Amino acid sequence: MRFSEVWRTALRSILKNKRRSILTMLGIVIGIASVVAILAIGDGFSNWVTKSITNNKAGKVETQIMYSANDVANTSSQPFNERDLMLVGQVSGVAKVKQTSSDDDYAQISLAVKNKTKSVLVHYTAGKSSSVLVGRRLRTADNQIGNQVAVIDADLASSLYGSQANALHHGVEVDGQLYEIVGISKAVNDSVNFSAAMSGEIPANITIPRKVHQSYTQSQRTGDLLTLSLAKGSKASKVNEQVLHILKTQGSMHQQGDYQSNDPTAQADTFGKVLNAITYFVSAVAGISLFIAGIGVMNMMYISVAERTTEIGIRRAMGARQQDIRRQFLLESATLTIFGGFVGYGLGVLLALAISALPIMPFHASFSFGGFALAFGVSTVVGLVFGVMPANAASRKDLIEIIR
View 1 (tube, rainbow, N blue to C red):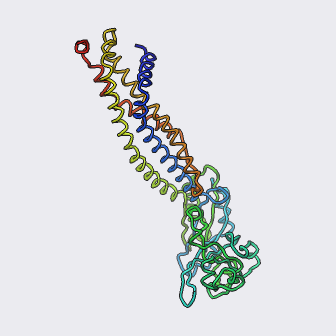
View 2 (view 1 turned 60 degrees about the vertical axis):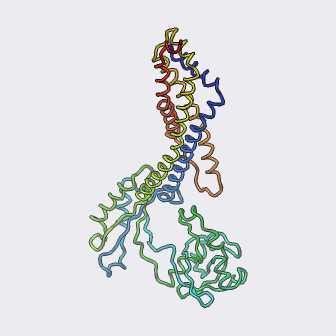
View 3 (view 1 turned 180 degrees about the horizontal axis):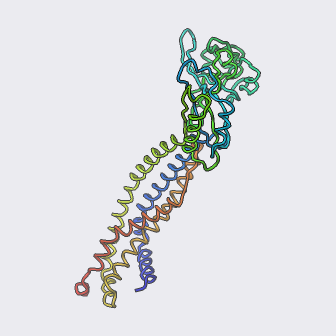
């Protein structure tokens, strides 16, 4: 028998018992949809986290080179000079290099609130603060001019002065200096969200201009970091290795200290592997439903073989070989599961898109040809594996016994 004829016969048999076929496919549809949705959400989350770790706000991948002095007496020395920046800028893969400071953007301090000591988070910013409920936010000009102003969160304002309105234009003390409160931001507990934390925009109780704080505390450093913006397609680990080699052999301070690199792509790779492992584990758990669905397919095929004993006998009497009968039932089983796989893939895509469209989701689902290939491959394998035994049973039926 020709393949096309065998496939048409299998398709007619499936359509003949539509309700039973649909119920049998349901397990395949649910299993494939679950796996596709989980993989798409997992890949989207992994891509988002990797981009958050490795990319700056301009979308460029950045790495950092840090200098640490061997002797405390050398800590006040200038760690990098113009020649160092020129040498680093000539390294293949480095698009831009700039000297920055490793001063932290955040600090935990103790603040006296109602005769008690409360631990609060302070954010030092050179730009704008987050949006405010009352008053105004900090501006870039505040940092440049040296305005001694601050924005505090609603809970701290109420604790210090009884209400948000009363807190405006009063003072808050940070490291022994008084800052005028010009704005009240959303309460920290209400404003924390995962997306903001991953992007570095951690909500703080107090936000003050960085330059003003540095002028009082004398904490400004002389630029002990080199921030490298990498060219598109460059491998961060390779670029860092070349830069470190040059600085350790030709750097202006290579005899007084050591140079180290901070490669965010390595952290992203490690985090990505963990996320992938979790995604695949959850997918494997969801795949249990595929095994159960396979048992259902096998059961349906055995029932079909028993119901079509006469048909099998007629085909055998007309010259059909055992392999023709086996091929017909295998193809029928595979057709059933493959169709269920396609439906399941479509539902999985819709489910993943619906989940990623929720307002609380900071990323979008990611789809690839691999997900489609997985749905097609798994559904085909399920149909063939769980259809083998019923197909063999059909092909081995004795013609004489059937005629009796």
